[in-house]
Figure 1: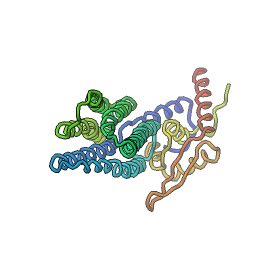
Figure 2 (figure 1 turned 180 degrees about the vertical axis):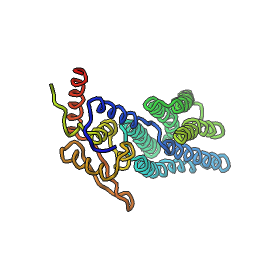
Figure 3 (figure 1 turned 135 degrees about the vertical axis):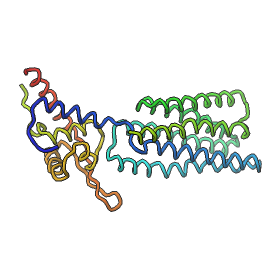
Figure 4 (figure 1 turned 120 degrees about the vertical axis):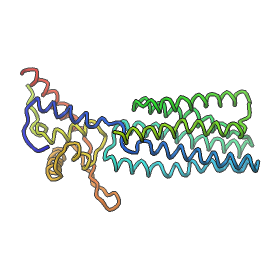
Amino acid sequence: MEERKITEFESIEIITSMISRTKDRLVKGSGNILLMWGYLIVAVTALIWVLLVTTHNAAYNWFWFLIWIIGGIATPIMAKKQRVETGTKSYTDRLSSQIWSIVGYAAIASAFLCLGFLLFGGKDAWSMMFALALVIVPMAEIMQGLVIREKCLITGGSIGLLLGLFTLCCIAAHVKLVATWFMPMFIIAFAAMMIIPGHILNHKANRK
Amino acid sequence: MKELNPLLHSQLRLAVMSILMNVEEADFVYLREKTESTAGNLSVQLDKLSSAGYISVEKGFVGKKTRTTCQITEEGRKAFEDYVDALKQYINLQ
């Protein structure tokens, strides 16, 4: 493209052509952050599951914080790298980022509330964190899927949400979330919510 | 009838403005690829748009490489909208 005067009809052509060139919803590595969180959660859950089942020592539950520490550090680094590689930030990117920030803040607030219950009331409210993980995260994923029109995110999020509602029912009905069945369910939920959609997004982006 | 803004009524500057209307920010490489222009020409046109206050240009570093990021300003957004309005009038007349 060079610098020259144009006709009115050429102006319209340029505007429509440039708009269509910025419409790519998926770029290479679109699913990487989702994959990082998915594999991180599955790995940490599997580790805690094995430790709890073999040692019966509840102190290993503190390892859950590894998810927030590692994920919290890796996410902004990966997001910045992706923005530099794609060379642009769209309004959809900002909306998605804000949706996930709300999830992050809700998780931090919930962790402090649960810690408060434990330290000041001697009550164990940590099961609420599972409900949060399986309700708020899928809701955010479904919203993102609706915004960028990706069925894999909507489907994955819906599976997670269904398992989250089941978890809420268990908590309300005082059914104990026992590691032997709950942890595998948690792993399946995050594989469906993050690992599978993450690979689908990357596959779609690479094919483009 | 409104007059077409001469600053926007040129191929490359209009292309850059059309892209920046649709994204929150875009870097120099992205704009060069999407507009299929040369670095020198793009640089000159970005300077003109920036001098008019239509875009803001931020120069930073990613590692040791420089990265120039552009964003449309409110003034630029208004100018683009006015340009499209004027364009509609011209096309309706023909």
